[in-house]
Image (cartoon, rainbow, N blue to C red; front, side, top):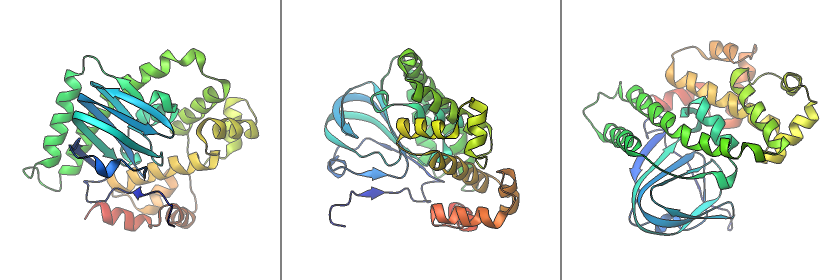
Length: 279
């Protein structure tokens, strides 16, 4: 379609769904509205810039950090003498605690000023050096990258948790219910029914679905499938367990149904996904 927004995906070659790079001097490629299928975390240590995300304009002054969620329309208005990093990561690589925090953020909460960020800078530099080095054997590099990125993500987490806590008193009931559902979704099988989650929260399935849709723009089914895909991708990527075993662990007794659902949602069979990320 002529007016369709550009849509960018991470390539599997980006070491299992993660890439870290310096903020480029030429940002002309990012000045047109576009979407990504992955998270972007921008850490700006010097300079200023203006970003727009889902119609909200952010005037960024370093040191600062911004997170952009998958499918959010965003672009840069201008950037001046910016130095820092852009971390692109597949959703399944995020620790569950950070995924919950990111999912709970309203658009205005996706920008954070940084203080006392010296340790964060060192962690980013270490991750970037490891990502770019050829000294680490290829068979070990994904595991090393995972360990370092997990540490960095857990360092990023409190910056956004603080924002959520500061605004907790102003959270509407729908947002509070949505956050509780997201937390339950990390603890229970995504194969559980909406009625199961609603019962745990002592509300009706219809009310739960209405609250989640109002807060996030997506229904319960979307988030259950989202959680299932992330859990499945982690098991496929980080373990050698058979697909049948993974399906059972995720709550799907019929592994063929699980495989069909995975292919329907991703365009890949579980086996093809595992092979691509292990090439």
